[in-house]
Length: 374
Image 1: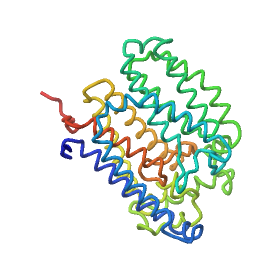
Image 2: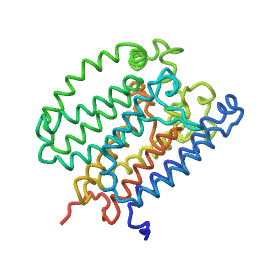
Image 3: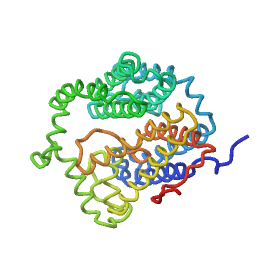
Image 4: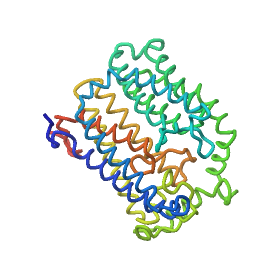
């Protein structure tokens, strides 16, 4: 028998639904003119994102009723499947290219992005493994190196695409989960030091170097490397406090590249102003905060690590995207969860929300209080 909705965390459910619906509206606002020119259909991206949203809501409602312990059984097979899919992306004729990167598998009417699946697959695998190996987590050979081997395989495939932003996201989520499990900090810092030369090497070559130069001084090449972030600043700046009005933005009119995907927050800032951006930030903060509280209140170790990984994933993706759009971070190609255009990202995000809701089932999570309990 289906459980009543009030047995789940309604705050997370409402935040996910609100962000997704808002994303559908903003995708249309940001893409209608471009879609009309490119596809002769101004509703092209709206129809696709709306369909993804409806399918995602269905997945969320289904997954929230599946006992989260079920994901223990698919953790290892799911990770192996993602490794295979990440390898297939690199095969010409199977992997689809866009913007110099090969990140998609071309399917009829849909492009599957395995890197989005890999993020959730890694979280499931680590939650399952950390639950089994709690007594070995402080060991270097039994509790740390095995995770680094798995992580290096995933990161290796992502770097070859190339998708450095996705690789860094996986690494960050894995390190936070290991730290929460009790892994020695010296192991984590040592791995970071070993990875630093490779990161510096990647950032100093190819298009990564161009992105770093644009980040450090976009005005040195305002019509080339620095064009995107300058247009983003113009969008945010002209929005003011209350914005130009929904649909009234100008930067999306072939000035701001990727206006409906990675830089959709710039369109939000121009059309809905500083107030609109603050509301979005607040909604993400509330979503992540509730997910963290679910992780703390979860009844078992697997549930705690599963919720923690999802909370960290949402938090880091939203933070990095906002940092890129405002010029606080170099361009990384990470979508804004729930809001940016993209089927794989939206479906996986709502799948993850469904897992969070199932973990929250029956938990009594009180709101944050600044007063000390007596």
